[in-house]
Image: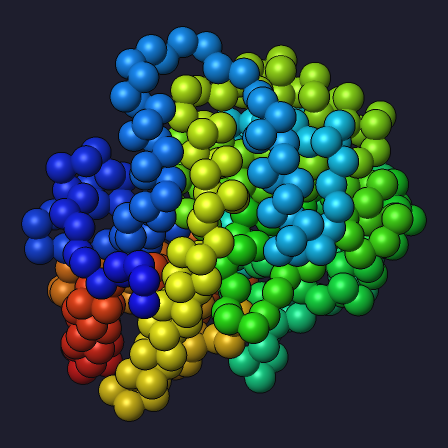
Amino acid sequence: MKYDFDTVHDRRSTDSIKWAVKENELPMWVADMDFATAPEIIEALEKRAAHGIFGYSDITDEWYGAYIGWWKKRHGIEMDKDALMFCTGVVAAISSIVRKLTTPNENVVIQTPVYNIFFNSILNNGCRVCESPLVYKDGEYSIDFDDLDAKLADPQTTLMILCNPHNPIGKIWDAATLSRIGELCKKHHVTVISDEIHCDITAPGTEYVPFASVSKTCRDISITCIAPTKTFNLAGLHTAAIYVPDPVLRHKVWRAVNTDEVAEPNAFATVGAIAAFEKGGEWLDELRAYIDGNRNTVEAYLREFVPEVRLVPGDATYLLWLDISAVGSSAEVARFLREKTGLFITAGTVYGRSGEGFLRMNIACPKMLLKDGLERFSAGIRAYLHR
């Protein structure tokens, strides 16, 4: 490999949320990689920092071009410049959009188990979380379209937040599935916010499908939230984008993010994004291969040493969804693992009621840390089963 993903970096002295743990603990929870970002991005940020003046920044043509070029080359969708806008983060965008496009007590549909912060964005704006649980059968997830149709048909339902690819289960929704979601939402006059922040972290040889690319219907009813932050480990730069093809919907979103003052970049936000999309492709391809190797390592390890736990198949994200239903309850097992072994992973119930019986593990780390995590996991599960 050209790039180094094996070096273990000490993050405890960097104010890292992930690493704000006890000395003996190993955090494998929050979606934050333990790899240094691409050297090409670091070089661009260092060059900007060397200038020494950090006043107000603007959105440049380069920024638009970087997004448009990346999504055309990587994902086969031609984005219009006018349909793109800057935002400080995907969560900030979703919260602002929920606030703007709903009134209190309206329903926002989510497909659980799903990214837990969706709940916050809905509840903090006085709306109701309307869960349409995914169906888990024979180790695979699918959508209960009858249930989804019924939830969307409620006159109080005005928004749906789609996770594409889906966090935490790692599912890539195919075009037929996305098209069916789009048609149902159009039928019931529901706008779709498609969170596609994990779209670039897919297994080698696999590709995600942008919701807005599927059909004119999906394009016209959707708001897509994208960013380089998960892909290149740049969350601290607070840089993202929103893609809204429909001009009327776009104006509402534009007013939302500007009213909430989350539409202006800091001095490094555009620089980092441009460098990522224009120079980070080779680094990303190696990262995807490395994460895929980690996933295969976990699968083999569980099969040999922890057969009671099943890895749910997935082709996206660096987050593993572990079926521990044969072991115990999510919260209890997660708590036990942390107390007894220092391994900090997330209980599945954080992602909704249907997350019971699962744990989420972050494997975006050097192989040495992964090995440590797996040994702790195995020891913890053995101790839990024989307690």
